[in-house]
Length: 279
Image 1 (cartoon, one colour):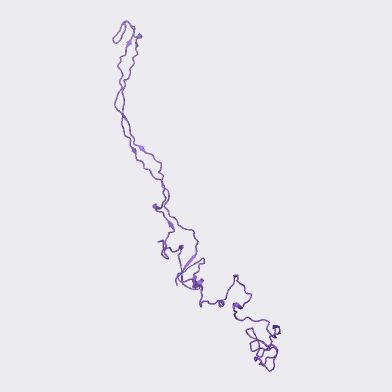
Image 2 (image 1 turned 45 degrees about the vertical axis):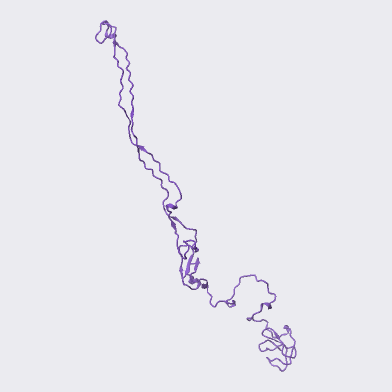
């Protein structure tokens, strides 16, 4: 029956005078043995190649062992391999550095951003880290702008009070007000009015008269009457004397607007944790 061939495989059929591990010099029969590399070896002296089904005591399965194949020896391989999610064991990766750590991606001077408030020395497994840029935003360096031409330069303000030069052009409205003249009078020049001269007359019809009575002396008092006499004022021109009226001062006050308070100077933002590696 088949015998183990010194660790190389299994011999098929029997041959006389031999012992395990020896290849008969005369060949004989249809003897071949299966080598560990999977090839069938014909013993010296010849012999036919058996079919796989003729091999006795062969294992039903073969435990995988580490081995390689030249790509040219692989048949039916695809031209391309669509990517898919997979993993590799570190032992399967060639040219892997002797020491590889997540910390290698964060050299000294690196800035680490996270929404987890945990020191990166814990997250990355080492390094010395300090909190960085508390309450500030980051901006790229710019050699053409003096505000941004030096690394770790700081500037800006959270609130701002505008100066007069920064105010837009505008106007102010004055409060309503009046001007009052000082009290004064106008004086007329001195003048008078004269009437034309006249004398009253008493007329009666009596026969006997007395002094101041015109008429017959026989007139009686009961018959005496006043004769009408019209007195006329003589024209006199009155002239107003000049009097200077002076406006009293009235102060016009501009109406104030605005309070002069500071105003926010914040851009839209989102808060994260920032750390700088120092060692």
